[in-house]
Image (cartoon, rainbow, N blue to C red; front, top):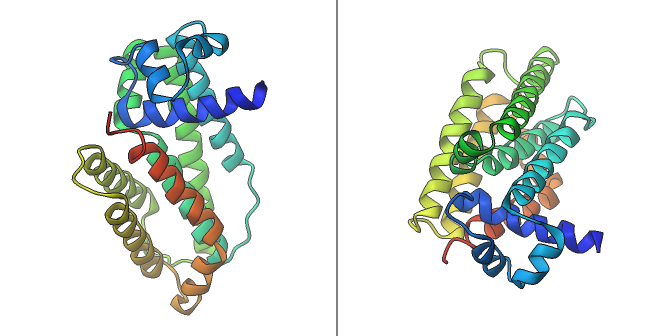
Length: 218
């Protein structure tokens, strides 16, 4: 029963990330999650419980990233950047805006966790700079903002049906590779670094598909 609830929360997370939640009734959420209204109410008494579960899912992922070990290598630099891409993609503007408006306490928890992740990420970038994995001249705080703008713009196009999955995947993949190549000291290590992270890339593209291409056409 617990596993089924986790699976349902995953589906509801994809729906709310792409569409927000304010305009979606419990009936509509059940329909989009492909479950009966009765089954949805077995796990959640109301929409607030669903939103809380979705936020908890985000917080769990952020916490995992904060405690993940890494080595000062280009391979792990790529892994860190991929997880950053995944996290930024999950923090959709519509979900964060509605959360702030309707559930401010949950919004504060999520924004604080996101800020903690960002601070931790920037500290790791400084460490990689100090160990000559990445070049010294890059301001990663500005680059983080650039990443947010780029990723959210690409996903907004996906929501508006201007991009298909293949186009969005190619755009984000090319953007990330150019960014990695432009920030590492030894570009000859980049191709292998991406190969070593293929499983994580598959997870990201699947998450992209499940969130923005499997549920937005309702």
